Image (cartoon, rainbow, N blue to C red):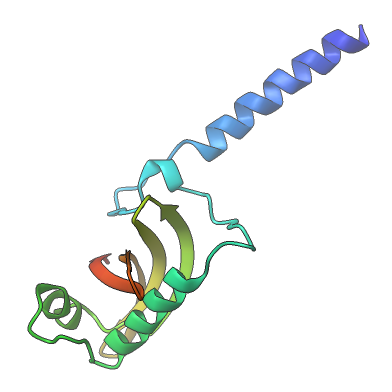
Length: 138
């Protein structure tokens, strides 16, 4: 009897956990976070944080209206977007040669502040990391 109850509760718990982790919210808003990394915000504390530092430096500069090289498509898009005032890392997707970092970002238009989402792609270079992609949804 104990084994049967243990089995039943294990199956129910697994189903609930699977439903919470692998479903996206029913929202009419834009969402750039891929479903496979959605809700995985508890990141590994011993991860390589160099890509995150590179992305944070990019977001900081973008918020101040700076981006180099200014004539690149990446910088044109970043400087045309709303200036980022604050950011919170929501998820991270590690791939072979690059890392995509997904942030909740705060911007302002006039006196109205609002939160959106941003994805920053950082590629591994011979001498470190370089931002090669940036996308936002507000």
